[in-house]
Amino acid sequence: MNIIFFGPPAAGKGTQAKILQDKYGLQQLSTGDMLREEIAEQTALGVKMKAIMDEGRLVPDEVVIEMIANRIDSPDCVKGAIFDGFPRTEAQAEALDAMLAARGKKIDYVIEMIVDFDALDARVEKRAAEEGRSDDTVETFRKRLDQYKSYSKEVLPYYKNKGLVESIDGMVSIDAVTSQILGILKPEAA
Ligand code: AMP
Image (cartoon, rainbow, N blue to C red; front, side, top):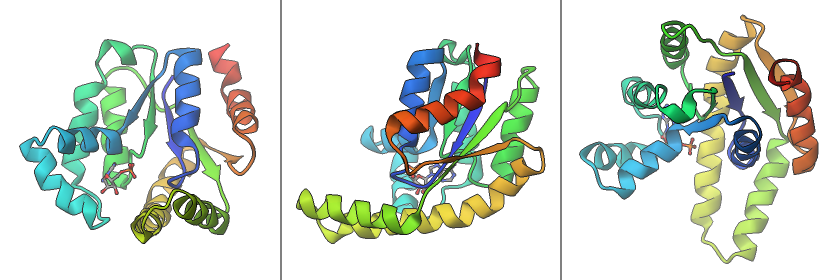
């Protein structure tokens, strides 16, 4: 079973992915995490991509497509994957479809977490103030939120046309979000 999680930063995608990972053995594949690992390890790619990421821009399609291609055949992905932060462009979505089709697989669900952007903004602002973090946190968050608004407009229609998008309320408790997701996946996962 292959799922795409669609939602803005701070919507709880990571939390929900972890729950599905434990429950169904699906592997979360986050291109953002993979890129941050490259940066932490100071690889040539990481150094190059950091500048782009710091500016809040998207890294080139071929970079993230290759990262996913390198991971998708790993033993931990045998039961399927939860794609998080990927695809962010139509070219990435097409590449992902081709990659899965070549393996006799497909995207089964695209789960869109609907959140109130203003409430999310207030949540991040409050957290930054409480934790004494700089304005950077809020600024970076807003940049990532803007990025989400623009790439979701490009990618969601691609999957809506295929009838794959299931929208859920992402503003409720963690458990309530999980129940909605399980309600969507149940028929296949059971
Ligand atoms: P994230 O943690 O998913 O918000 O990703 C952090 C940053 O990594 C993004 O702001 C982009 O610069 C870059 N990035 C992550 N995933 C992708 C992707 N699928 N396509 C292009 N850039 C990406």
